[in-house]
Length: 362
Image 1: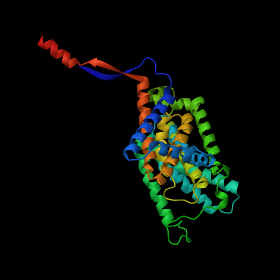
Image 2: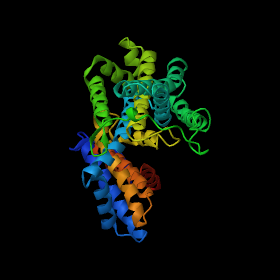
Image 3: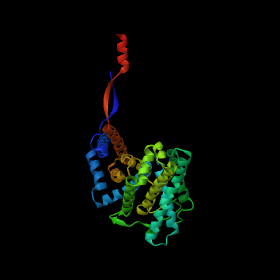
Image 4: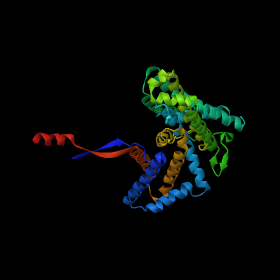
């Protein structure tokens, strides 16, 4: 009897990650068709509606872009940490921390000129996300504490802090006793580029480009990759692992915090408990599909933004918006599977136990 196993190919199949990503998307669409048919819906009608709502006209593109901005920044935050082999699972909380810091600046600077107020809000958002990541960074760099656990736990802390603020000291006195934070000043809103797409697109694009260049073409990025691939090599090369860990995790949190500031001033009109909207967790998928490369998060974020906006639109047809979540999951699973088989092939080996038994019988 032959037993299957994976064997490393001499050369990976052509196409690489783009082919794996396309395969994952195809698998997700096929699974979605099966699910929709099982639920008694017409897949072609549902997919057409999703496309029209997310990419069908300039207004649809604007919605998709606004959704892709925080997804891209959250994915970039995870990818920056992942470039060194670290996992920042706290982007969700760091987005909230950034939004809290930006909202605080909006409260004290309500009379400032718009360009100054927005700039200070975004700077504060970067600081808020970085501060929340500082604790896990110090614990990992100085004590060796697993950053997955600490960053994940701080998500709950950030959520509770937002709840306390909007139920307590920041509660709007004109909210008729509802737990709502005050509305942002008008000048705190990011200007629009077209339709409802806001200036955050240019901010996110600039940050992604800068991070991509820094990771790929600078000495800092080279040291980052060395430290992530081999701690022994990094130490032999004179690279301080503790400094790199500290820098990378705080920078990762700062980028996630920026996502919170951009989301607050670009799409939201006040601080809410749902300001992060799952962007931090979705950013993990975005970064994974981009192979932890900052240069790849923009395309993945745009696709996921389209899937999420399209998923919301099909609720009017009696279809649960969770279909979009399922599609995102199967894009990931399909891409990972395709990526594995692009580098490995299945071979069948003889079962040595059966062969030995046959020899002993002879």
